[in-house]
Length: 191
Length: 191
DNA sequence: CGCCTTGTTGACACCAGTCAATTCACGTGG
DNA sequence: CCACGTGAATTGACTGGTGTCAACAAGGCG
Image 1 (tube, chains in turn green, red, brown, cyan):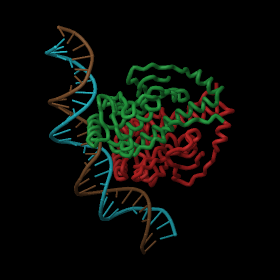
Image 2 (cartoon, helix red, strand yellow; image 1 turned 30 degrees about the vertical axis):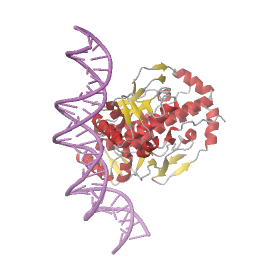
Image 3 (cartoon, chains in turn blue, brown, orange, cyan; image 1 turned 180 degrees about the horizontal axis):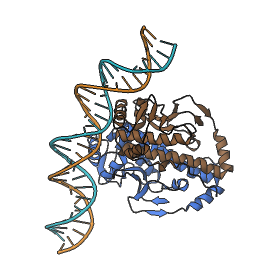
Image 4 (cartoon, helix red, strand yellow; image 1 turned 90 degrees about the vertical axis):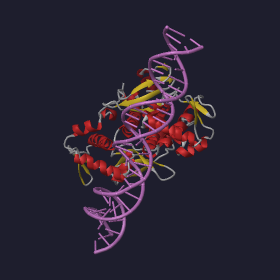
């Protein structure tokens, strides 16, 4: 399923606590992981109106039988997903709340730029502060206070749901962000 | 590279903070992710004496050209890695410190049982409390206190580096643990 | 025996969660 | 056009979980 919109992947505990484990931006192959894992233990929820392109598992199976290179490209996409997971783990374990928020902004800026959905100084973030809390493992109130700190420090401005940053390098330094893990513009060699 | 021992995957920040993003148990294909991602941004460190079996990328390339089913099996293994990453994200964002520790114990018990390295009521955990802190995003001191709470609640005992649990179901309930994400015993269909 | 790593403990500071109230933005219906 | 309702953002007061620092105990090992 390829999504033309924003979607979230989340896990929910017995007592209602939930954690968002991935953010899918337009163009992402949202549940490619379910091709081989079959029953995926977490659910997907759309954030914005989404056009979805379905890809039946039989077709993927056939494709992976006949086109080794294309298979490697799809595999590569899931490996990038895993690398993003690791970056999030790093953020949740080692970064402060404002740093985590800043790190997420840096990542989304780069991912959205890749699909032409970010402007030079800003991008649209269709998440409420409460949802951001479920992404970062913070309470909604603390997300709000982290926002305020980034605004007071002058490294992030907001306008409605737009995130505005004039000096991305400053934000990247603040968040200790290194985009290598996204493997942007990398190609999967054919031979 | 297939490892016959314990190893850690970790990310390090500029200022020295580090976060462990994965624990490899004996039998894991430790850096299969680097096959297509090439430069992996995090490093691997061994915990115990390890025998390693190297697998050159050219061989993997050839294998994925000629054996679609085997390719899907390898792909599947990396998808399980990603599922484990998501479970860790869930734990770091939604669980308390003792719950996180208990959740990790449940996961390692199941993974070690699969390779015949766990006994019915215990398994060997070759990590210091400080390293556990870097896994769970906690300070070493707080890992120690979480240990004490689990011991006082009577759901975990320790003997040197052995983790001893008499009632796994109780521990699983405490940690809200569901092993589905490990996809144990699942096969990748050939046709 | 004495070092060195690991585990343990206490005191204290601070980051982050909770709860409740208020403001704000926005859409809807009268 | 305005009153109202709803969800989101914001604020304050307070609590509690977790980090930090420092000291000490407990083992493993040369």
